[in-house]
Each structure stands twice: as structure tokens, then as C-alpha cells.
Image 1 (tube, one colour):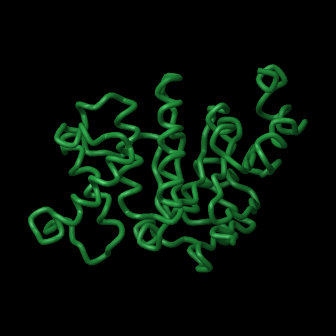
Image 2 (cartoon, rainbow, N blue to C red; image 1 turned 45 degrees about the vertical axis):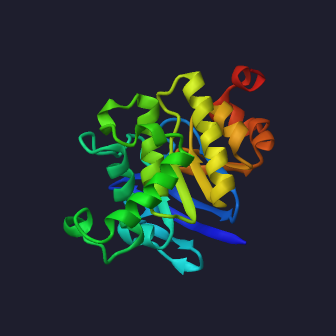
Length: 253
């Protein structure tokens, strides 16, 4: 079953076309990788799909609804959540407060001002604890976010997105800045999250070991245009992808 359909999507900034006529589907249960060189349009595409930016042309459909140009907060409430390249956490709030705030996205009637003093607190914290356990952060719940290691802050960013109970989770360079051990640990956590929550996932990532280890399908962008899609093995052996992005030495490695 197709969960997300991107059809002829285009995004321009003045005379610059950042995303040009990109089309692909994400099926339920997929872990789709989106790769390409810097400036290929990957994050712009993410922003258009998730409602941060409006498309210049084309459509985005999620669960058979047209969400093209829909504000991001509405997209979250419909079951599509995302992370960002920079961890979007509140450094002076505790770990559990950060994760509990993520539950606000799943219910439009919960106002921020009354959330932590109102009747929703216990329910939100209970959901947050389950998410933090899944992300391996149970022992950090009382710490302020700034006290976490960088790798733990990245995981907390995932926890915030996951707390909104999405059907589709979009991850923007989740292992960026992590050392090899931290990257491997986060990849293992994402694999467990996907399995236990039955999630569909889409990931922008430059770390090819992570892409190869997690993704069942890959889409490749270059200069805003989709140049290939297929299984990871098919993509890394594609001469066009090797020329535009990977390089022969990297593929051999």
C-alpha cells in the first residue's frame, strides 16, 4: 500500500529551481533513503513534503489526502512527523519535558500554556516515558537536555518526533556529526523503533553505511532532479549515481 505519493514536485526560490519534477512513492513499511551530493535538494524536498515550505508545483499525498502546502502542524496531526538536521530540543527543559512536548502535535486541542499544569500532564509523561525507553534514554529523564551528550541529544530529537505517534517518520541526517560508534548505536535504535512501532520511515543521510544497513529502497537526487531509485544494491552499482555522487572508490569500499 502506498502511504506517501510525491508527484511532479517542484520548488523554486526566485530563478533557482531547488527541486525539479520529482516523483516517487513510499509504501507502508518502507525505510526509504534519500541521498545525493550537497545542494542536491534533499532537505528542500523534505521541507516541502512536511509542510515547512509550499511547493511551487506538483502534489504531495499522504494516506490518500492531498497535503500539498498544508502547514506543518496539521501534517503532524495527520500522522507525518519529522526531525531536523539540528536537534530541535529545549536545552533548559528536562529530557522528559522535551519528549512530553512532542505529544502536543497529535492533538490540536491541547494548548501549550495549560499543558503542563493541566490534566494532560500525566498522560503526556506516560507516553514520553515509553518513547524514551525505546530510544534508550530512560536513565536521563530528569536531566536537562543540555546535559546530554551530542549523540543523546540526537536521539532525544527523534523521541520528540516519535511522541506525536506518527505513521510516517521523516529523519533529516540523523547520524550527522556522530562518531562511528554513536552512528551504529542510533542505527540500531532506529531499527528497533521501526519494528516495535510498525513505522514507515524516510531518511536523508550522507552516511552510506547507515543507508545500506537500514533502507530497503533509495532515491537519489542531483541538482534537484531524481536520477535513480531502487534497492541500495541497485543504486550503488548504477553508473549515473557513481558518477554524480558516490565515486568508484567509495563504492568499492
